Length: 95
Ligand SMILES: [Zn+2]
Image 1 (cartoon, rainbow, N blue to C red):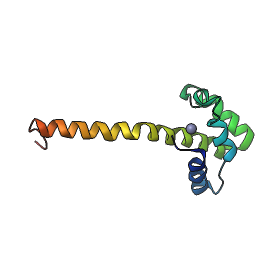
Image 2 (cartoon, helix red, strand yellow; image 1 turned 135 degrees about the vertical axis):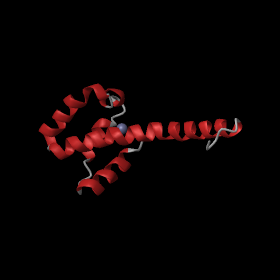
Image 3 (cartoon, helix red, strand yellow; image 1 turned 90 degrees about the vertical axis):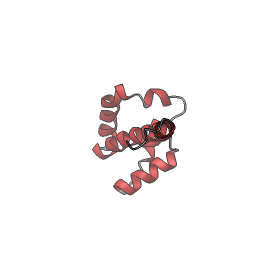
Image 4 (cartoon, protein in one colour; image 1 turned 90 degrees about the horizontal axis):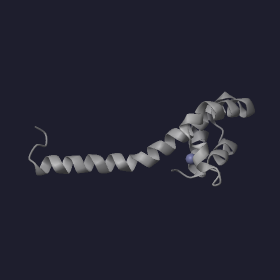
């Protein structure tokens, strides 16, 4: 998962604000799992909307999405490589 600084940079590029409070809250080491829980997205998005406005809530969602891409990006690359390798091995690649 990208570090807080990367999330802040992404927010800055999207909105002109780094939303440090949002990203630090989400990645708080003591509460990290709970705060990345997709089943609580409505609850936390409302909290950010009430506290900092709708744009902050959107940046919270982007944070989760970017973490997800970070976590599974390698899995997808590895899987694609394994599939291509197996297809090549069995002579079935591009048929
Ligand atoms: Zn995170």
